[in-house]
Image (cartoon, rainbow, N blue to C red; front, side):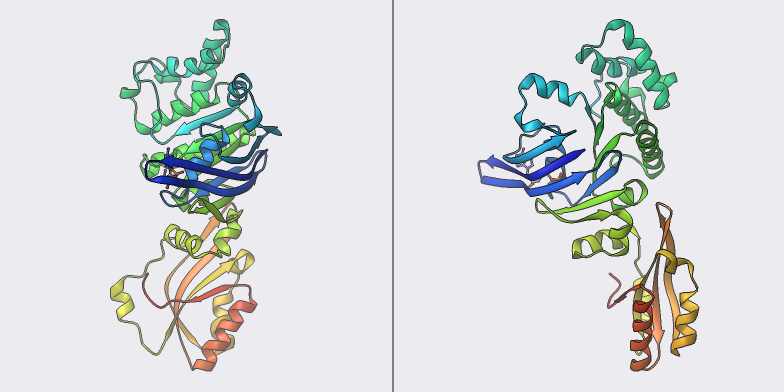
Length: 339
Ligand SMILES: Nc1ncnc2c1ncn2[C@@H]1O[C@H](COP(=O)(O)OP(=O)(O)OP(=O)(O)O)[C@@H](O)[C@H]1O
């Protein structure tokens, strides 16, 4: 659906050349929700803006629906862009126009006949749950409602792709959940391919099918969201996941731990998350364990259990216990500090 082939974007500034995207290749499949995660400056916006050529790549190719956008004429590109909708962190609505007019504007710009506009806008406002707000102005709306207008406007011309630039970063947690639910619904009902950039792995966990992690303009890791959460490889990915799963022991508790024990962070993947592995760990390995923190998350519908436990036993018993966990396909890390 979307292929980025050796995409490179360099910005020329007074201070010299700044590389925004450093030779990135990605394949985003039709109908999936693909997340791009990274800290500020990692190159997420640059990649997203290259997909609709808001940013012109310095080198490489951008193929959408098999068409290489980098070779199109201005007019062809304008047409191709109508099939690539975009929503923004700060909504970018026209403040002097009503909700209705903001959505209608996208249709007018695409040359849709006047007679079709009212019906289509009504349909779109219904889809995003704003039928009763058609006559209001952006200033009269909450952040979540503004984003819904942004979504309606982005969908106006039946795009095949929706690009989402940090769509929930300006919203509170409850509103974030309602916007993510709307994006999920649109993806399912319209079969729309969604590319979303965020610095929040939580958003990826809740919404995306696959994810790429970016650092310094490069994609450093990518895969199915569950697999990336269950088997993160790169240190940055591990950090993002650690933060998303909110596993932080209070310092007070850490300081009270027995120095003779060892603290393990254990990941129970797939079926292991639902089996009685902890009781077998204790029974079969002669150790004692004190659970300090733990929960089972469902990513999609697959369980991923994470537990932090203090284990006590002889060094040999602890080693054997770690081996036992690895044999059960668990991930095991020795925790050496609260962070
Ligand atoms: N128009 C520009 N001119 C010069 N440098 C730019 C421009 N846009 C981006 N950059 C630089 O390219 C790099 C990647 O920026 P980009 O905005 O793509 O990252 P990001 O991950 O989206 O960050 P953020 O989350 O803060 O938006 C940064 O070093 C940035 O300073």
